[in-house]
Length: 109
Image (cartoon, rainbow, N blue to C red):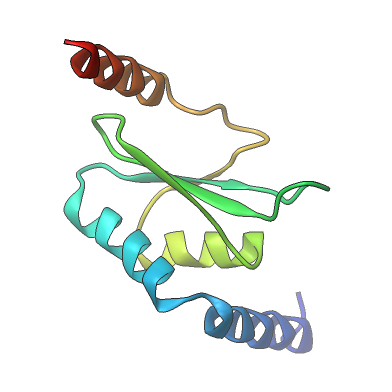
């Protein structure tokens, strides 16, 4: 990657960061700061959905939010020191499904 292409990416990410609402940025940052063992999965855009990021804590609690680009998701994860995976390559963790089942059972009682 040359200097000019790196600069273009930095400018693009800075522009996209301005497009992200403060509430969204705060929510994602707060989730990372208040949960243990958070990992990120970046979901690539499709014809129906825009790119998004899925954050999963060690206990399986998760949050998913739409983003202006997948690159912004990777940059967010790197800035917060969170391991980041491509959702099309690495499957979602089992603990996320188990957390949902536990929450559903507790809600039925």
